[in-house]
Length: 358
Image (cartoon, rainbow, N blue to C red; front, side, top):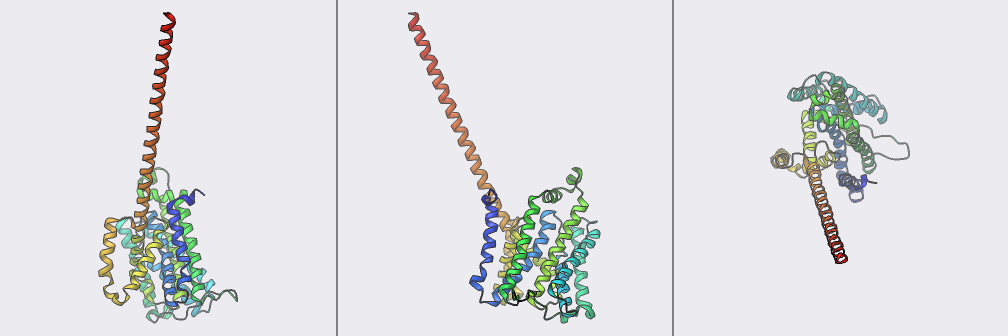
């Protein structure tokens, strides 16, 4: 119950409730529902980037590549090999996690800007394989007619609203995992690494293993979002795995707030709808969005959610200080009143004694 009094948790729940109710307003608008669902798929991948960047401070630029692996695994297995969606989805997520773990074994031997450059190279290699290996990935022809999830006669996931709620439920799990990690000893360990790797190593933290697991978790979320994206869109091409996709994810997390629970979701949905709003000016949209993002980085470097969280903390700190001062003043006034009463009583006793002596 105490958790529900936390403004951050209440704010996150409010965002989730608003998104959950969007089909009530746009259920008949298939295009809008598709845009929202695609945004949720991207948000899942951004939560993966939040673990490696927001918690450990490692800038991985391979997330777009992992997103593409998950998407192509589902797309190719359901079309070329006639697998069910769930079989392909499971293989895609596990395979992406394994590739992420193996990539991390090499990438995490580097640090700082070298790590960022190396992971960007990994993402670019993934994109080259997808865009050039025509006999397997169909290259620029892409993969069409990706299957929807199967649920027998219970739910028809070809319905945009049903697909929306499937992605939304998986997103809820990702949000809870992020919240649980942040509140756990694992999260505190990762945040210690972000603050200072030397300090973390000095207090006995296995820095290498922690970063390795964070990198694999990041890839896992990327494959999860990519696999769902392939089914939602129905067609995938090499654009799903470009380095540009990684920078889109990075933009989402910068706008929303790194290291926060609600930041990836808020940033993704805001920027996604801004992109849709400026789609008629797609070649020029960054001319408008670029200065906005730069302003956010300068004036709210922790993102929208981080800035609001800081504002809430400052208000709470002022209330605590005011309460302490008020209580201190009350105690001081009480002590003064007690001392005055004591002095008055002492004077009265002295006067009585003097009268008796007379």
